[in-house]
Length: 385
Image (cartoon, rainbow, N blue to C red):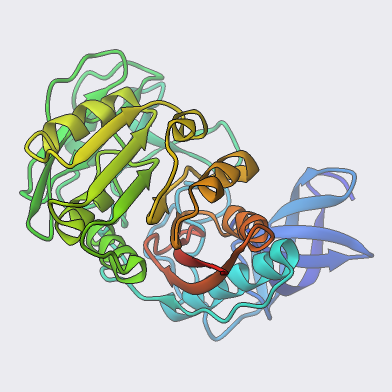
């Protein structure tokens, strides 16, 4: 095969990363814009020694789960922000469950049974968006796996308060990043790369009010903070007087739920590397004497501590890795709660924990990124005495 070739294939399954799987004359092809069970025509876009990539350009035999994409740019050569707009929401969740199961089987050598839970809304859910300014001065998104910028006027998954046309009407610096975020009070902040912003965003979660700087991480789906907080606290089963660790703590979402559960005789240790998140956390928890906030890398900062009752970690997409998990194991917590935005990283780290005295005791998954291939999971590990 060569780039630009067109082949007719049967789509056999789903792969991690927003692609489906097909084979042509023994070679694996990862295909975008298809659905397992379909027969499609694929145009080859990339080649490597072991596999090819391609786009579905014609559906010969369609899945019953194929729907008309709500966005005209959800197509080959269009915006790469969404992977699954052409698939019914119910099938999207089933495919994501298959991805989790496959990653655990491959990387942790274990079978898991998990359903990806629906979270509404499935459009208009994204409260934080990052754009790049195109050469004509408009807000744009990148084409999938390409450096091509696609100017957009509307985004189906963006929060209704994100006024793309309005921001694009301003004089914007070409090539710079533009971040737009919406608070729970409806206020909107727009931050342009290279221009200092002093605006703080207000986010309320179960009665706790955060003020957050534009640089600090916050979950994108408007329902994600509440859902993840409640799921994590339910699995943590914190007790009065516990020493709770909130690792990769950001501005303190999980600390906000834990602080009343551990009580005044309990203790919370937050560890975070981001300077802006640390600043926000210190402001948000200034009145809580039992919350200590440590700035630094988790694997380094943990060396100063000797024990824990419950540890929660919410690492970046790459996961925690063996060094961090070894440091957590040294604290001998009775429970470890792992919040993961990548099932492959979670499965790999599960294998490490399973080999060091802990076992997977609970797993939930949430469709907090509808129309995209991303999945959020919350796992509980318990110590094997």
